[in-house]
Amino acid sequence: MARLIAVPLLASLVIAAMLLVLDRMQRLFVFVATEGGPVSVVWRMLANLLPEYLGLGIPIGLMLGVLLAFRRLALSSELDILRAVGLSYTRLLKVPFLFAIALAALNLVIVGFIQPHSKYAYERLRFELRSSALGVSIKVGEFNNLGRDFTIRIEQSADEGRRLSGIFVRMESKGGQSLAVTASHGQFLATDDPDTIILRLSDGVLVNDAPGFETPRILSFSSHDLPIDLPKIERFRNREGDVELSLPELFRTGMAKDTKPLDRAKAWSNFNFRVVEVAMMFLLPLAAVAFAIPPKRSTSALGVFLSIVFIVTYHKINQYAESVGALGRVDPFLALWAPFGLVSALIAWMYYQTAYVPGGQPIGALERQFAKAAGLVMRAVRWAGGRRFGKLEEA
Image 1 (cartoon, helix red, strand yellow):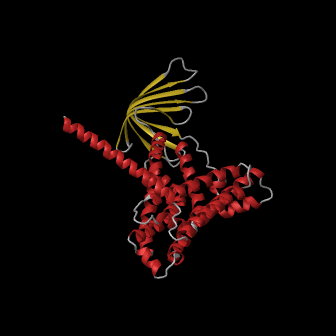
Image 2 (image 1 turned 120 degrees about the vertical axis):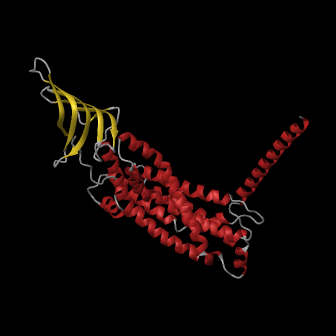
């Protein structure tokens, strides 16, 4: 049983995480390219998003792992044999519940402690990209503003930015003095001061103008070092908001007497959201069994589809309940645990129908409607194919 569950569980977990990552990857590449950051930042941002995706991917993997294991036993009639020798569904669920306990503990650590810090690290990377804290980004062929009074344009860049050509620079000071420089070649050099870099230019012309000059001063040079003051980078904020706090921090925020009512509602909503998501994992083996077993003499995979819809829909309901509770309109405990109670009752009824009612099939009505719809589609396809074949014969 453990082997039957482990293989689809790991496969489902990897596939679910990869699908969620791929959904965000394209947008991150566009964002990083727009901000001019290095490509390596994309992988760091995706790594920080992975704990958030695992928060949903682990329950999906657990559900599909148990479901596919029982479905395989049911289709091969091994489940009937196990039931005939006296093994009830409750005894067969011993191993799935061990998986559920282990994965629930892992998920609690992820959503309760790892995810808040990874979310903060992700937001920090976004801030550093927008504030150019990851390095000066010069777009070739465009006018780039490095600060309010400094503009640079580069025609060509080679050797990963070490050799520049076709350079135009314009600088202005507060006193109205301006400096315009054109050079055929140049390169950026680091200095001991992290807030200053040197732009070493060669074979160019420098034009210096000021309010006291009758005419601008023009200077030709073979080599000239131009110091550039980098724009000051604002320090990133400390961790704040309910999504960036761990479970103990949320609990302390909710219990503190000096916490504002709205902040207290946000803290308790997020706290209950994370706890209720983990608590639902203990009921997923029961739901998986109810969805896994198709009607006799049927190989319908409707239960697999419905199980994914079921768990994703419940996750979205919890997200909506969290947002409503965070607004203070509904008590956060009631907003999150009332849907949990209703879904728990539904799962208990489905499991009871499967395990204790002879011939019980909780999704039997949906299976019948699905079979009728599939039959209609197949007849329509055959009818369309027959008409096409008849027209070909007439031709």
